[in-house]
Each structure stands twice: as structure tokens, then as C-alpha cells.
Length: 345
Image 1 (cartoon, helix red, strand yellow):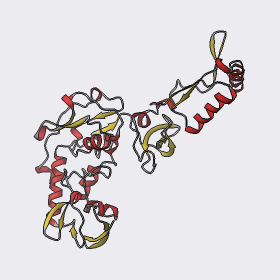
Image 2 (cartoon, rainbow, N blue to C red; image 1 turned 45 degrees about the horizontal axis):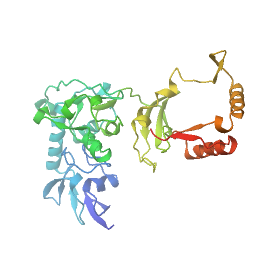
Image 3 (spheres, rainbow, N blue to C red; image 1 turned 90 degrees about the vertical axis):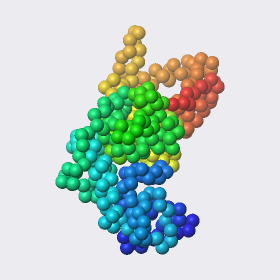
Image 4 (spheres, rainbow, N blue to C red; image 1 turned 180 degrees about the horizontal axis):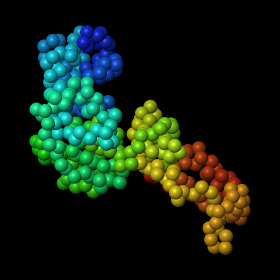
């Protein structure tokens, strides 16, 4: 693919042909404020925050403007600065100012953009209106929906459509009453939503937030054990507890995507009812036992069950290598071909 040379605010950069101006700028470490853009999704051009001036003539949205050789882009033109500042001020006008208690505090794209474009308390006096009072949708067991914080960027809708092909949500109603809703505006738990959380991790504000969100002290790279796909993930750890999970975008298997189990199914790790030692049945009751005692009991019963008295049920949560060894053990050691599996989530 051919490269083209453009200038942004007087800085000469090289971009691949077919890139947009916003993509070229971000790839070269130049920040153009934006709210509805996401690298995983097709450009939508909804927020009008990424406007630039082209060749000192026309105003255009950079997320949908293809690069052309010799193009001169200005992001600090006075007209550009006024347009994007007004766009952000209109968004903030109906947005709740509860940043300190918001789940997205310090990780909110609206905060970053508002600070960058220079939104001030004095400038907001002509715009400030009352925040819409829309009840939260707390029906989903893993995340909440707060419509009052939504900026209508459409990232959640496009994620559900373009990446997941579920189409559980879309725009509903019109004008200032417009919201992101399910079919018939039913609670999200009663919709086609599969609770994968892909929309939640891409939401630039606090409109979609995990119920038990906690900032991790550190992250540990790992592989999801819920099935044999081998999705890469990072476990957020706080003390000796797992408090969050995020997909590994550099993993070739899932490229950052996770299903509902991989993203939210980690409570069992620290569950108080989780077994920590083997239990064996004595006199009809389960009692704690040592590992040596449990393994000796298993080996004794296995030796009595060779042939037709033995069967294996393989697990989809095991690796391919472990399942291969399990079937070899069943056929070669236990002398039977009675093997079944549960290769599904």
C-alpha cells in the first residue's frame, strides 16, 4: 500500500493510503479530540468533535476524511477550536457533574476532551440545563446502564452490530428524548443481549459500567480456562483477589474480545464455598482428606474399574494437550474406548 505525505499543524507526517486524517494523526502520536471514534469500528462521524480545517479552506470531520498527498491540516484554527468547543459544551450541558463518584473517573474520554478544548465553568453558564432524570437499568447481573451519562456516540450500538452481530440495542425516540434502548425499550436483561461486555469496555463515559468495578493494584497476564479456545486476558488483582478482567488485544486468538464467562465469571476464584482440600466419603459422609489419601482412593478404584467398568468424560475447559493425554490414558491404561466430552461453553 502506498504512503502519502501530509502536514498537520505544520508537522510533516507519513500515512498509509486509505487512512483517515484522524487515524494518521493518532498513529503518529498527534492528538485530535474525538468521542465517537474507536479503532475497532467503522468511522461514524457523529460527535463532530474531531473537526479540522483542510488546506486553509474547508472544515471537515477528520474521522471520515481520507488522506491525500500534500494535504495541509490545521487542528488549531480559531474556527475549528470554536466549533469543537461548542460541540463539547452542548454535551456537557446535560451531563451529570458527578465525576468523583463516577466509575469512569480519570478514565473518561469526555473529561479528557472537555479539558483539552477548554470547557470552563464560566463558559458553561449559557448552556447549563438540568440533567435528564432517567431511571438506571440495573437488570443485567454484570453491568448497569445510566442513560443520564450517555453522550449518544453510538459506540455501544455499533459494537453490538459490527463486532458481535447481536443488534440488541439501537437509538430510540427523537430529539432531546433520544436514548439508546432495546427493542420495545425493555430492560437489557430481557433483550437479545448476551452480556459479553464488549459495549461496556468501549463506552467512553460512565453510561455503561460494571457493577462491581474496582481499580486493580496490578495486572497478571493469563489464559481463560472456561473453554479450549485459549483467549488471552489480563486479570486485575487487588491483594489476593481478582477484581477485574480485560481482554488481551495482542493475543492472536481473541484479539481482546471476551465472552460473558471470560469477562465476568471470576467470582468463583475467591468464593468462600470453594473447595481448598480434597473430600472423601466415609461412613456415608463427606470429610476432608489429604491429597495422598484422595489419590490413593482414586487409584484403587481405577484399578478395579478397568475395561467396561470405566468411562471418561473430557472437559472443554482443558487444553488440547490435556484432553489428548486423557484419551490416551483411557484407551491405553484403562483399556476402554468409552469416552465422551462436553465441548461447549
